[in-house]
Structure formats: structure tokens, C-alpha cells
Image (cartoon, rainbow, N blue to C red; front, side, top):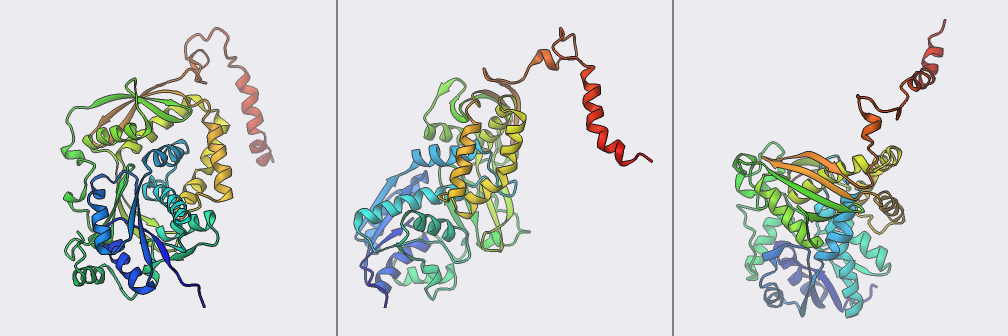
Length: 399
């Protein structure tokens, strides 16, 4: 017989799923429920959350400001690695889950809780991301995943359940798609978006203007990096949170950062997601431009060969795995000389690189010039180089 659960820490957003879960946990497990909400930049969604949680049955609510940690330790790490899942997705939701789960375990220890609970469904990736982090940091923790236990079949059932118990939620049967927002992005999934042929409604987007309605005048900016991390915009230094907030606004005004893709979930199915990630879209273009003059060729190729694995580990929830720890150290090593400036033009959904400069630049204009190089490069050396490269090709076709 399993040990009685006396206290649960619920990762709580105040949305449809976790609002229903709060009451369901109390009724099902006859236990105290402590709610925990991580502020990772969702903004207004935190308003009146404590009042709502307590009205639904929580004994208390912890709201933890994780924005600085989220951006500096998680988002910037992904930028340094140029991490893209399946070549498109910038991992906004994937990066937020481990920082949230990490703090949830800290609260569980502090509160002496027996279990933790999350609102992820049994079909999605988030259940894996949350629980792999829980078990990595607290191996003996009890995990409750209501979507894998309760009788509700879908969000329409949850809407009815909340209505029956007078729980105020914003989701409706007419607009059932779900959103996830943090300082890095907003994602939209489910409901009317489940048909991959259906275009996202024009009014769905919150962070970005459509390219058609974006500014008609291009805007040039200069981004400064130190050891792979962005530190300034147009020469003005910003902290991590303020810098990303500023870039999100700039990118949004120019219609930058919208992505619509069908991705392969870790659990095996394909899923359609729509994302807005304006600031990091700009950062990746700038970061790659700066790396083009500061990274050694073979170092860049080695790092790029690991990018798919790096992104997959983040997407699949293995942030606290030993293999990710090793890869992260390697990425940090590659960034020691990635300092300098990238000059960009923002216009109608596009980020155009105009220039790059660095005191660590490996680019040598005297060597590469088509004009007189003053003996910096002996062109006749290329003959022997080419013949050696061609040796196996020639031997293969000698009669």
C-alpha cells in the first residue's frame, strides 16, 4: 500500500488545466495543496493569482521570480549553441520547464511535501521535461500527473468541471487552443490549430505584428556580445531580462519571429505548434554572424555537428543529464572568443546581417584580398594542396 500523501506542490498557472487540478487533487488525495507559480515572464497572467488559488482550495501560493535565471542560464545557453529543434523551433517552452521544475523541487523540500504535481497531458512533451527534472534532482519524489489519472477526456470536460464548481477560467469551447508564454516566446497549440492545413487566426498573435502590417521603414541595430552572451543594444548595456524584453519589442514591431511547424514529439506523435520568438530570432542571426569571424573552422564544425543532439536533449527534457552537462561545458568553451558586435537590419519579418567586427576576429583582409597581398599568401602552394586532395580520385580512375 502506498504511503498517504499529506502535501502536494502543484505547478500552477491559474489556467484551465491547473485550476481544475487544484480542486481534483484535494478531492482525490484528501491532502493539502500548495500552489507554486514561476514567473518566467508571462506578465499580466500573474495578476490576482493568489486570490484565485486560495478560492479554489490552495493553502498557499508561492510566486517565484525566475526571469533572470531563466534568461541567463537557460536562454543564453541555447543562443550560444544556436539551438534549433528540427531546424526551426527555438525551444521556448522546452527551456522554461527545467527551471520551473527545479524551483518546484526546492519548494517541496522546504515545505516538507510528499509529492509534486504538474498540468502536462499524457500526450505531450512537458510531462517528460517536468518529471525527468524532478527525478534527477529528487530521486525519491512522488509525482502526480492528473492527466494520466483522472476521468476527464479533454479540455471540454475540464471547462464543464470548472463551471460546475464555479472555478473562473478563460478557456471556452469556442476558443479552446492553449497558450504558453514566457520571456522568450509564446506558443499556441490545440483546438483549431490541430488541423495542419488551417492557418492560424490573424488575431492569435500577441508579440508580433504581421510582416504586412509591420513598420515600412527598416531599422538598423548593433548587438554586442561578450563570450557569446548579448550585453548591449546600440552601445547601451542592459541586464539579461531587459535586453531580451527590448529585443522582443523591436522584433515584434518588425514582424520578426513567427514560426508555424509540425514537430515530432518525444512520445512519438507529430504535433502542430505556432510560435512567436522575436528577440531570440534576432539574437541567433547576430550570434552566428559574430561566430563567423571569431570561431576556428574546425571548432565551429564540431560544435555544429553536435547542435542537433544539443537541441534534442533540451526538447526531450534532459537538461540535468550527464551528457547534457558535458555538451554544455563544450559549448561554453567555444564561446570564450565570441565577443564583439553584429550589425543588423530589421525589416518586414527579416533579419539581415550588415556587418560584424571583433577584436578576436580570425578574418584577415590581407590574406583574403584579390588585390596585392604583399606576400601574405603564396598562391602556388595551392597546386600541391589540390593534387594531394585529388590523389584518391585519380587512383580510383587510373586504368
